[in-house]
Length: 151
Image (cartoon, rainbow, N blue to C red):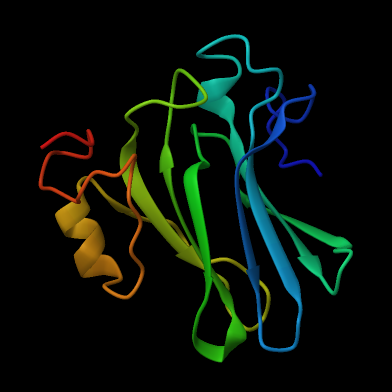
C-alpha cells in the first residue's frame, strides 16, 4: 500500500495505532498508521500516513485515507450511516506515541471516496464535530486544552 509520499512509502514500520471494525455484513475494516522506518522526527513520524484495508476476511482492498502530515495517531474506527466507515485520529509529529495535536475526523462516502479532513484543535471542537464518536487518550477525559491532552 502506498500513499504517494516518498518518505512514508518505503520502510518497514506499519501497523501503529491499529483500529478494527466490522459492518453488519461481516466486512472488515482495518486502519493503521504507516511511519516508514520510525527513526527520525521529520522524515518518518511527520510524514506518516493513515492506511485502510477492507473486505471480507482476509481483506484485499487497500486505501490511503490520509497521506503524510503526521497522520494516524490514536486511530479509532466506527461504522456509521449507510454502513460506511468513519475514522478519528490525531497528528503525532515526532514519535510513535506522544501528546498529539489536531483531532481529525473523516468518513467514507458510499462511492468509496473519503471526505476532506475535518480538524478540531481541541476536544471540545471534536465533540461538536461528531458527538457520537468518543475516544480517550491514556485514560484522560476530554478537555478544552488546545489538543495537548492535559487538563
